[in-house]
Image 1 (cartoon, one colour):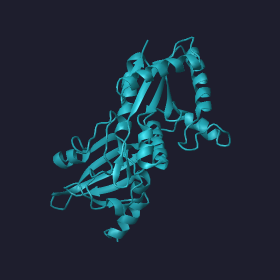
Image 2 (image 1 turned 120 degrees about the horizontal axis):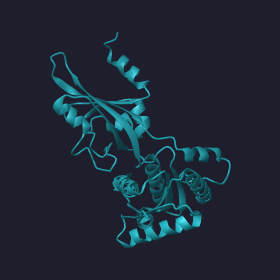
Image 3 (image 1 turned 180 degrees about the vertical axis):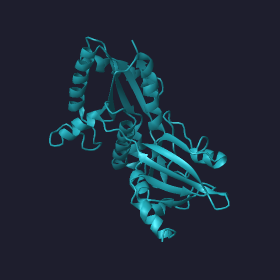
Image 4 (image 1 turned 90 degrees about the horizontal axis):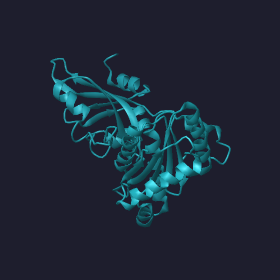
Amino acid sequence: MLQSPDLFRTLLDHLHEGVYFLDPQRRIQYWNRAAERITGYTCKEVEGTCCADNILMHVDDDGNLLCKSECPVSASLRDGAERQVRVFLHHKDGHRVPVHVSVAVIRDEKGETIGALETFHDDTPTLAALREVEAAQETPLICALTGVGNRRLSERALAQRLDEMRHADSRLALMLVDIDGLNAVNDAYGRPVGDVVLKMVARTLHNALRPYDFIGRWAGEEFAVIAPNIRPIQLLPVAERLRRLVEMSSREVSNRNVTVTVSIGGCLSNEDDYVESIAARAERRLFEAKAAGRNRVSVDTE
């Protein structure tokens, strides 16, 4: 009974981890239910395809595409070693999802490699800021479209974090993230697709943050990211990482991949800062990033 393929499929379908099996050419031969839930892709959509064929498109923390170069599955098939990595996969809805991946080579009774098994689980942090949002479900503090805090909640969170940083003798970073060319997306595809892009960007940013960071919708196509306990040397790499992950996100619309970029302006808090003063500095930096050609980061680390 333990050798029954149907039994093994049933067992794997009841796991909370995503599981899929690839042949030596990296074609997906099996895709369990958890993989469907985490990625949004059904087994019918992926089985028989290559994992790099516009499906998972793993990227690292810096947004570098791994499927064409440093793919962990390819590396394990080549040297036979097991691997564990943290990557961002591409969700069917377009946003990026952080996952912890384990890869193992599978061999037959003769010791010949017949494929690789990859397991992965969603590594999305439970944001402290989103707990505030959940507590405010019945109040007008949430952006209904993107599911993140609205301007009112963002300003409240920023004021609270500034006060906490003063007492802790530390600094926070405020990054204003503006979607480049969203009006062009609306004109080309219609407002509903523009709304999908807004949600995609919000989810990608949210998934890239630490548990105690905050994201809110600051204006129409602009998001505010509040990152406490940031040192000056960290601000630019963090902002660049967010920019790159959004750039590597995409959503399929009418057989075309819709992509957008973001411009980011960021600054660090000072002891005497209040909401309006730090927001004004971040806005100036955002304007500089847009003026420099868009898809840019401009930060003030003073």
